[in-house]
Image (cartoon, rainbow, N blue to C red; front, side):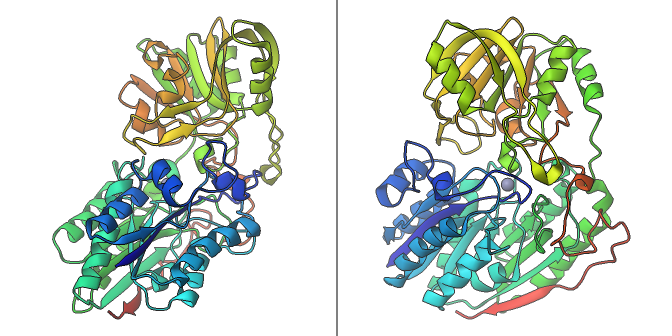
Length: 507
Ligand SMILES: [Zn+2]
């Protein structure tokens, strides 16, 4: 048996000004193109990724495994056509050599210069190469589900957590179902529906309501064996594409009769709760005032407007400026993305005093924002290569590569500045640079939800700080022109949504 396993992950924020060429998928380590084969397995095959579980599942069957590409990029703007073509061609060429099964670790919210549904287009191209091969797909919880995904994939399974701490298990579920379908020669039915609602990401987590009951019901249905796979997708709202939406997808054997009812039940619950998915950001000055009034530490401030984990530049320092203005002290912050500032600090070296402008180098035309950095004066406390292995529960084991990284220390602040963007969901971004976050009064992170994986356990308080950026929860700042309308809550009178879709996959 021959199995092709590949990883292609990008969450595209169409409002982000940051380009996404092929080099963005290189995964660090000095490469300029994505790894393949043994190099890909070395990088992602032992970490908490769906890709790793798919490799393990294929090997456990004694399959010959080939890995044409592992292309993982931080969220940013539309993927260039050249990058997408290179990635899709690598996958398709490998499948064209002949295989018995395909396992793909995808995101579900990739948008390219030409294609609003990147994953759907990838799967279309694979089907042109091989119309019959069984394809198992793992998707991110922030998938914007489409017909091309549902129609072309034999199996789809999505993350059930946010922060995403079940990537490996998702890969296991997708692979298990695919191999069962192959072994039992099963025909299956995929039932799915998307709802015309853009849920706010801060309100999406399945750990809390309104999502918890919905996800719990979906998981219980899969666990009971009523259906094979259940996925609830919060959707990715920061994409001006027709498909941005909440979605549900169920896979059941052809002789099952519960999939459609289950999709209906889950969608009805979500639609009834649509108002609970709205998040009202607090005024930033007020958020920092609340932080200043606390006396048990550390207090984590999550700057969620400029979160690079959803396409932000991670270089807007508006929140930090307000913290300094209000006199907060003993702060750790970062990583702030500023290769130029890192270069300046490396040039003067550890221990040197320096006065420099940090951050604010990115202009964001889509929301009329100019960069907002800070003039700071301090000492270069540490310079590192930016590499550390994740020990927390999200992407455990992955070696992060921040590029060259420097710590600027002032009397009130230790600021981590890096050459690469990375959302801080593991304390390693501080500890590898000699900073102990547990000893800080305030920890400022550019993150919305994933920071909880590494920092919720040590935080005495968490305050959501609404800094500016392309990841904000105020949809009125975004010009949506391709989104399917009406959509809730942008159009408050959006009527009750359409019916469940079905596709039969014959074994
Ligand atoms: Zn996600």
